[in-house]
Length: 174
Image (cartoon, rainbow, N blue to C red; front, top):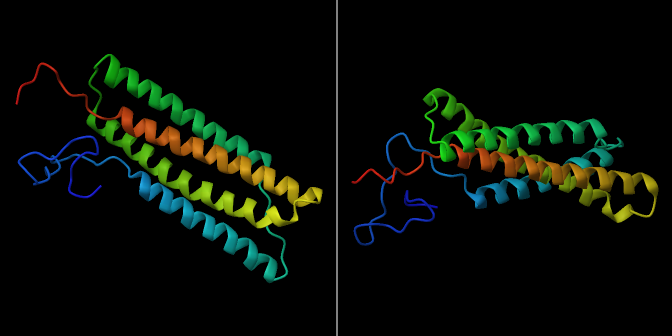
């Protein structure tokens, strides 16, 4: 969102939007993630068409890819849960450098996951027309599964980003 306000906060002082606090980072925009995924779909479709037009064989998604993405998603979910418990539930202070590191890992994972989800979806869409034979069917299934696991990485990255938010102090008065 533009204007520097958080999405769930109304602007204060009439119509003037509240400027972001120094040292704060805005939450990742869902619109931006969707735009990145759409760009990824275009890249995936174009890459397969270009490789096949050049007489090559488009790459297939392997089981190892699915396992690696699944492992990354599990690590991110674990980090998000651990950070949420420490920061939001137990209200522990964590080192600022660690918090920034976790925040940037979460944001980067969301962006890369969105791009890869789009590319894998583009792969799946490019082979969808030839689903009758087993080769393209397997490619569609594997690429579709990789797209789903990539969406899990996006979700885990967003949860990690959210867990890094500094909780509002109910005892503090402005």
